[in-house]
Structure formats: C-alpha cells, structure tokens
Image 1 (tube, rainbow, N blue to C red):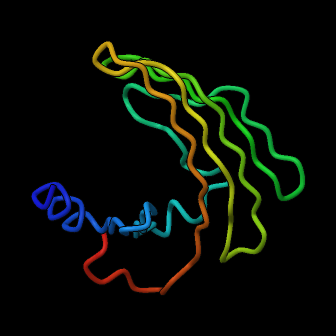
Image 2: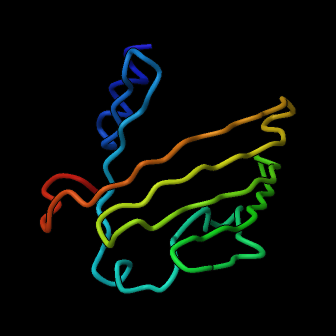
Length: 117
C-alpha cells in the first residue's frame, strides 16, 4: 500500500515494482572498524556458529520473542567496498509460518551519508 511504501522510503528503503528492494544504510566509522558483520544482532535475535574462512563469512541466526525463527547467512567479501550473499530464515511470526530467502549485494556508496541513517 502507498502508506507502507512512504514509511519505508522515509527509512531509506525503496521497493521496486519487479520485486526487489533497495535499502541504504549508513555505517559509522566504529562499525566499519569491527572485524565481523553486524548481522541479525538485536534484543530478540543473535548469531551462533559464526565462521570466517578467507573472504567468506557464515553464521546461524536465532530469533525469539514475537518472531521465532532460525536461519543461516552466508557472505563473500569480494573487496573492502563490496560484499554479496544470502540469508535464509524459517519460523513463525504471530503464529503464522514464515519462509524467507534473500539475496544481498552490498556496495560502498560514499564517505558522507547525508540523510541516510
């Protein structure tokens, strides 16, 4: 619906008519200096079995609370400015089943974030 698209756009997320989503996220200098990706870390989700091997990162994600999900992430850090990978999550939200798979292609855009949060 248009109201949801407007809310998402205000957060830097653009939904394309073809089904893809473009999101922009500003990373702080402290986050950029960390030696691991900030994937799935929240009060209700955490990462288990995280492994780095060369330029690859993989981990299992576990979420409790309103979303009860388990999943797996796999990323390849091609260069310091580009990484790609997949996430796969399965579980329930509000008693309804969820099965989600996402392909991610992330790129560094600029040194200054502007309005992006």
